[in-house]
Length: 133
Image (cartoon, rainbow, N blue to C red; front, side, top):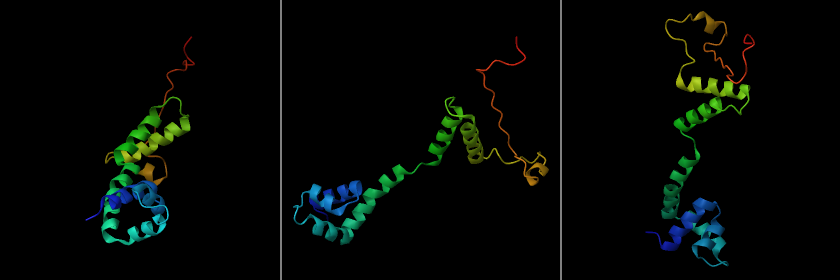
């Protein structure tokens, strides 16, 4: 069972990544904070609690699949982003959605010749068509 100070130490350690500073903020004295921080990190109960606290924080920092798809979609649709970046985002999005793979009725020769299986065409609706008066 962890004391309140030890729990606070763990919480600050996960936030800061520094045992001495975590010990100070948890209420240990300035003189002993370095040694207490070092000792606390060797205790199994404290290690386990730190792991328990750090797991959700680590998960929150890593993008999940849906976030990646949303990101690529936002870049692809953003008119302020250059065409190359938008096309690259669209290609990445297609790969992740599986639409870059040939279907059974497509000619598989195009894939073997190194040609793109899926092609994106963007039309800038803000520009006037050359054929219009």
